[in-house]
Image (tube, rainbow, N blue to C red; front, side):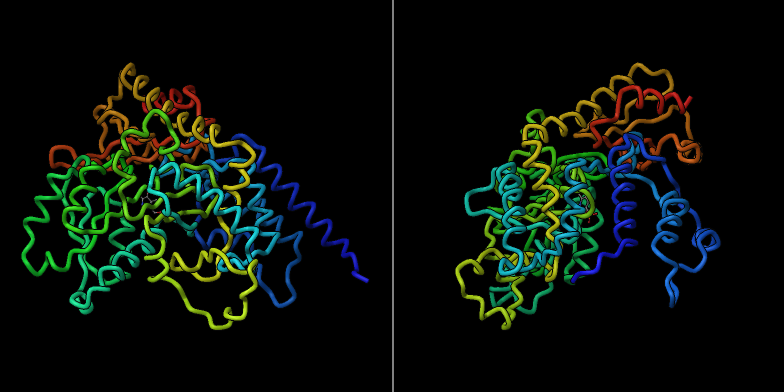
Amino acid sequence: MHKVDFDMVEMTLDVMKYAIGRITHPAPELGKPKREVELKALVGDTVTPEGIGGEKAFQLFKDVLIKATVPIDHPRHLAFVPASPTRAAVMFDLVTSASSIHGAYWMEGAGGIFCENEAMKWLVSLTGMPSGSFGVFTSGGTAANLSAMVTARENWRKNPMNENRKGLIITSSGAHSSVKSMAKVIDCDVLLVETEDRLTAAALRNKIEGLGKQERERLFAVVGTGGTTNAGIIDDLNGIAETCEAHKLWFHVDAAYGGGALASKTVRHLFKGIERADSITIDPHKWLFSPYDCGAILYKNPDLAKEAHSQEGSYLDIFKDEGAVGFNPSDYQIQLTRRVRGLPLWFSLAMHGTDKYSWAVDQGIALANSAASIIQDHPCVELVREPSLSCVLFRRKGWSPEEYTNWTYKNHREGFALVTPTKYKNEGVYETVARFCFINPDTTEKDIEMILDSMK
Ligand SMILES: *Cc1c(COP(=O)(O)O)cnc(C)c1O
């Protein structure tokens, strides 16, 4: 008979109680990092031959360690790209873990992968990509960008002329660092079009036409951005698509942050041309209210991704039973064994409906617009540029970079807010400015006013 372990039952209840408390708390304590030596001094040795016991370990986690983390879903956490997972999605993240689903192959993960694919169909529909387009959930935008770049490069290398060529990608200076970083992984070069605003077709054409013959032969892809991380700027996706079609280049759109805004009725038109992309990155863990981590890569022609990524496992060959044959997520991105990380998104979508998602995304955009008008009426701050998507860049008149830093530290130290400065290039000069990025629909205008007042 299965022995019931009462300690384990109690531990499970404790953990669940904590999880429920955390999920239902509207504004968790805004923790902050401590140095490793400080944390070590506070918790001592936790991994020992005998074990310190679940109760003690959990206590240390609750009393010390969680307080050395910044809850990214706090309504006054407006730094970087915050997150705001729905309660439904967080709950289902627990279920995802508890269910131990291997998400690489349909043979083992069919039911879970089916759910992911339902959510994926919605993502694909938001982009307007042609029928046959499909995608897969990844660990994040970096892995999604990498998966797309590998696919593009392998497709280009099908031409024997390109077999030994080092590839070249063009993107803009506003592109996310992961594009440059993943180019290193696939050992290709990146050319940046310098721009202070959106990448236009004319600037891209200029760059392409300025290439020497050898460079032109090495060029295989262009990466446009659907919402820069710093300022929410959307490139001229339609113009870039046209240029890529004319030059037979792979067109990848990195919409890791901005992709959620495809669900918005108010800004969807700004993404015109995204439907012509060969591949698109969208991070549900940014603006589609999924817990970490959940990215997605979508392909116009998934077969090309399969050719690039499929890892032939001969041990799979015995599974010819009809039910065992289906969509294998491992075929379309860089990872083999994987969590069905699209499952929390699926549950939350199924529970709330897609209209609720449109509403929640529109909330972030509305907050950015409210912030802009509050800033315009405020005596000591001014807008650096009109808000784009949910990003607002503004300056505190007369402040030096140090004053921005001190302000950030003070607000964080007091557990009040996390709002960080950034740099914005205006007419060739980098300026330190303040930045809001709104994701959490529970952020209020009052929060915005209080933060601005802290700059007085
Ligand atoms: C955040 C971001 C990424 C990186 O995504 P991760 O999920 O952090 O790996 C890539 N591109 C853009 C535009 C982003 O905003």
